[in-house]
Length: 124
Length: 124
DNA sequence: CAATATATGAGACTTGACTCTCAAATGTCA
DNA sequence: TGACATTTGAGAGTCAAGTCTCATATATTG
Image (cartoon, rainbow over all chains, first blue to last red; front, top):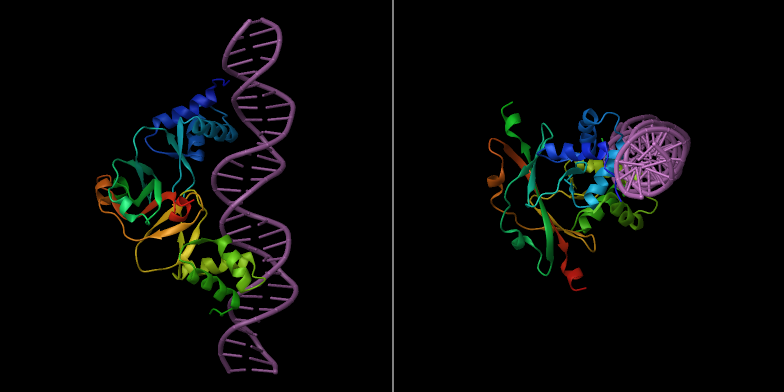
């Protein structure tokens, strides 16, 4: 049904070793050294299949290219550093979202994104 | 420095008359009847200039095309109806965002997007 | 109204993020 | 190991959201 290849392993290894979501391009860049010659089409194909199988989650953030991270069981949001472009996962969430809902509507899910400067960049 | 034209007026009128952000395509569709023959390039140009002048705000939402709305003085977020695709502005915000921040980092702004079904769609 | 600065529309072009095609390479199973 | 199903890489193609070009049209100013 599905063969195991160096390329596939490399893509998943890259995501496993990063603590933050990566763009397809970033995955390709990091997979290159692990699996020389890996092509962009393969990375896109693999990411797509992994998202379909639930192994990977596609993270959409306002104004940014789609990013990908390993599926994890806990709900989380992201911090986007506007100076180094890193996307850091955040722990925890907020209360009070239902209060914002228009009456009569139903909430299925939500996104919270905090933009700013990460600690490394703050320390210039 | 800048001439006043039917086209420009039409674009702004469309935004003034909508209580929700619109995509450039939606602005074009609505501007057509007001200003027959208006071209896409003009709509894009006008929106871009209006954003640069601060008159209009570009709203970026995860996974959606950029939307545009008249600049307003109050901070707000959006509700995205997954069934009719409308984007409704929300009033109010939440507390507790600073608690989510990684230590040492600085928050510049944030986005909250609630996805779900609007009241009209809930009532099938 | 004339002079001239600016704006417009059509359509070609660009960019980013993919997706498709297909011959060659590779994984799996007997 | 052989048969053959699946995957791969390169490069062309696609799609959405714009941007650019330039001849023509329109706004503004004197």
